[in-house]
Length: 202
Ligand SMILES: [Zn+2]
Image (cartoon, rainbow, N blue to C red; front, side):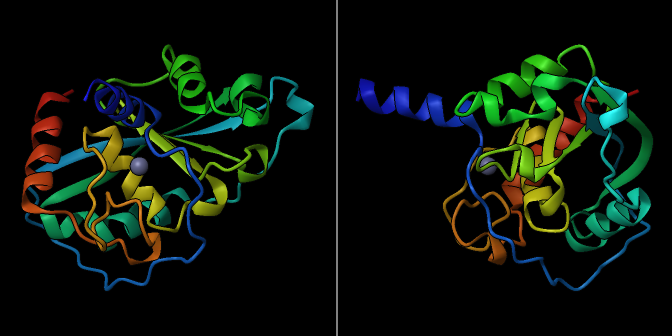
């Protein structure tokens, strides 16, 4: 029993630092003007401290946010709004290969002084600079590797960032199995998301 509890705590802390599926989602886009909660999202590109080695991410931030709204959030009365676009120069986070098994810890540590506590903070980094990480999410922060921005990893990590844990049912956004099927939140999860958003106010 004690062992189980330790495992559970570990798995919550480790979030979902595991390999994901490369299949992009195909979900009917639903947009609503009657939103219960709206939250700003900052996009933060992770770059090496040597600025001449900067990489390009080629992300259209507005398209990314609109797509998340249409595919996953507006249908539940939750709206994501584009905030600031920033850059974090951080070698530890830029190349996570050196921190295998410690990715979640390093992510939270290296971003603790570089996030807006009143927003969702999405950090974008190169998938090729990790060993097997699609994304990490916790405490208003979501790390999403560039190859997974348009997969269900994005809403999954945002779910973690807003307080959701893993959920075993196939098709649920917080499921760890068959990621390409993930598309729904349960009513209880939506309540949790909205409660968290209530606490985050600017
Ligand atoms: Zn997860």
